[in-house]
Amino acid sequence: MSEVPQISSDAIDPKVVEAMVLQGIPHCAALGVRVIEVKASHVTLSLPYNADLVGDPVSGILHGGAVTSLIDSVAGMAVFAALFAAQQKLQAIATLDLRIDYLKPALAQKELYATAECYKLTRSIAFARGRAYHPETPDDLVANCVGTFMIGSSDKPPLPKGAKVPGAAP
Image (cartoon, rainbow, N blue to C red):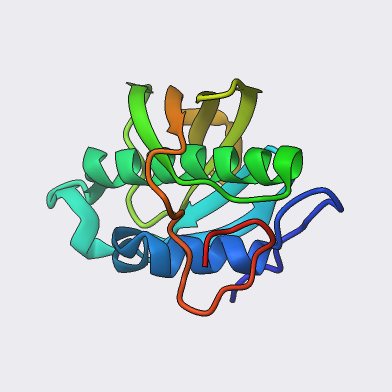
């Protein structure tokens, strides 16, 4: 059952963020990523457990690449949300640098959450930090990250066809 995303009044519509995640970033759809929460500079995504994403068949532990995709995506979505809250428009971004510290393996048969915040916007660079964890134990981190993102990396952000977002390129 999908949780209803929470949203603050100065943030982008979570349905648009979800469409961006699932249609604008195809590998997120392939992984089964879901949007849990969207706020002005803060986003939470989840990755349901999927046996196809296991890195070690004996233990059932999730592959590190799936964790990387989730945490990179949530950090990027936090930047999108912060840009929209600050400028009321969307801009394309690209990950310039992403440092991930893997603190422990993601548990077998468990959904993984990732939360990120964009804590600094400049004219051309955004800075975000995030963490991955199991929702039952949010303080026992699987991984944490810091990332930098280039703002305005192309003419169009990854919007789904037909999306109506103020300030977004048609």
